[in-house]
Image (spheres, rainbow, N blue to C red):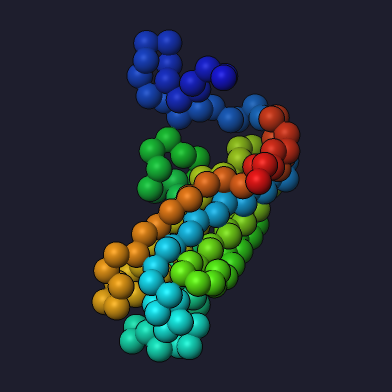
Length: 158
């Protein structure tokens, strides 16, 4: 395991200096799942949730959240994102899977932006459906792929 870079020699938090790192193409993909009652998933698929288009609103929430990652995560660098995609898929019988992909040309990676996008989209599904299913759960928020930068390309094994 590499040393923790967000702490100085005295153990105080610090923002990592990336000023000398080269700008490279970066990509990160993250996943989250929302588990619910099968009836709730059916309502989402049939457009019967009172608050509206659950998957469309969740997609937008994920994209918007990714752009604010540096405001949510301490010591996270603000990045100029090239693109953010958030895909939501119904997984029968009782889940919505969120896959968020963030891309940038920058000096540091976009893993946190992808994770924040996936999390915000999943939480939005929960928020829009909680009136019909209070016991939904957001699960398996994880990085599944990272490309670019000094550490190279990494893909989570299935």
